[in-house]
Length: 259
DNA sequence: CTTTAAGCTACTGTGAGTAC
DNA sequence: GTACTCACAGTAGCTTAAAG
Image (cartoon, rainbow, N blue to C red):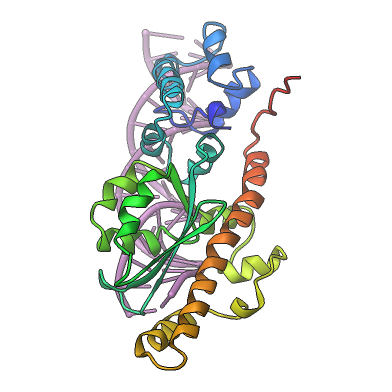
């Protein structure tokens, strides 16, 4: 999918990319093979020559930062299949908006959930997240990412150099509007019973209960972490749902089947 | 309540194609 | 060559949406 992408060349948009595909330039290699025969404005030819060569080199060397910088944000989903170290990311807060308002960070690597807790191991996140090629969030653009950058200024460049797929606008393009819980319902994704029916405001309440201490403290924390884990794990389902549909909707040339 | 890009709606610029 | 149209890409400004 990434190797069929041409829209990151300056001056090339969706219509030109579509035209390239229809002329048989279905990926970077086949573009180079038939570059001379393609009917193209000189401006596009120059831009594509550089972009295609740079892209092949960047992918060979697994340099996600090249694609993170040159691909439009809304097209970052195209890079996911080529860069497999994906972190599904979700934070909880105490209701405030300051740099110290983050209470929980959940990071799911596709196999297990890593949890970071305020006043325990939260700072560890800033190091461990650097092992990932990119992140998947739900409305992380407007919420999780700005919070994390305020809390850990180092992450400004870490996030800039990695892909970020925000499922909220992506699913909206596929006709699913509404919040995470609403879309999960639409798609028939179930939550574990104890975390079912909880919302972001409950996460604030559970954090306060945990911090107050006493009899229900540990139970409140357990429930909060369970809620956070549900969010990140379900994001993987949503991404797996969205990718093939985005691919089909964008009119990508079909994969060459090799025996 | 706060935050931020995406989405939307113009509008501008570039270039290819066509007619004369 | 000149003058015109049309399509595509990019940008500016405003609105929208969802997170806890």
